Length: 331
Image (cartoon, rainbow, N blue to C red; front, side, top):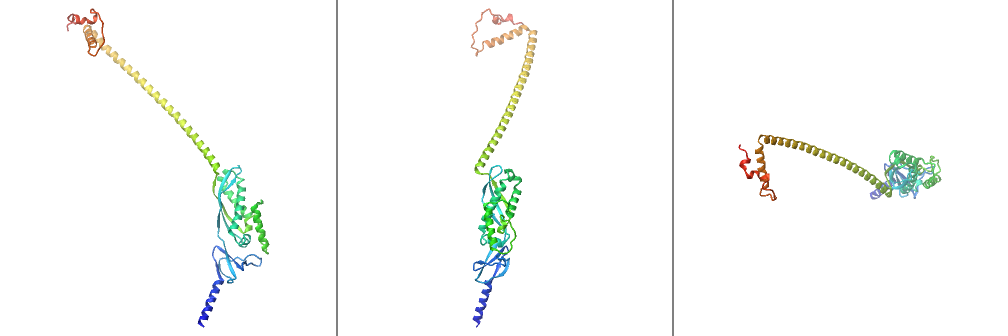
């Protein structure tokens, strides 16, 4: 008896455990019965809020949808500006599910990959259109923030333009209308709201030029820098020549002044020397003549002098050798 009661108690606990399910915060739950989603009176999927809920064991299963803000990284793509210049733009999108019932029906059972494919196609079309209206300067600096806001608003509310991505979104929105019988909020079939998605933010991470354009720009920048360098070098050379010419002028002028002063000093010395000689000569002309003759003899007959003198014996050069006692006056 006790074993039977214990078995029944365990069975009841297992049934209760299998009947309860918890939807975590940041999620929403959808209950599937025999593989089909449970719907309300308007034929829309029943959405379970975070908390503890009850389901039929075995017969029903639970599928959860992420209610948090999700990030979709976009691969860098090529875009053309108003100036017909190519840009490589790397971006990302912040989005979340705003209408879980519509999202579940439009994406074929809450398929995130399908939702992101449609979102990416719509985003690329919208971004391409907005960049095509801007020049490079506006995209990089002034109008970048406004451009992102315009793209986000266009994704959420839709535009009058129709592209291939818009057709795919409109087809998904039409499928939602067919599967529900109640009155749904009016949304633009060309907007992401038709998929139950709200775009929170759109951002450009990086803007680059294509490789071939970057190489051309780098070559032009290098040429400009080289031209500036050549100009600076020529200006430096010009300044160097000016400084060299100034220095040469100063050297020449200094040497000329030194030469002039030296000649003046030598002239003054020669004049003073001549004056001294003249004074000495005037005091004793015969003695002065005798001294000069001795110096001439010394210079002429020195051992290092190899010159040959051809003179007459009666030459006045030898007058002091003939009769020195007569030529040298008494002192």
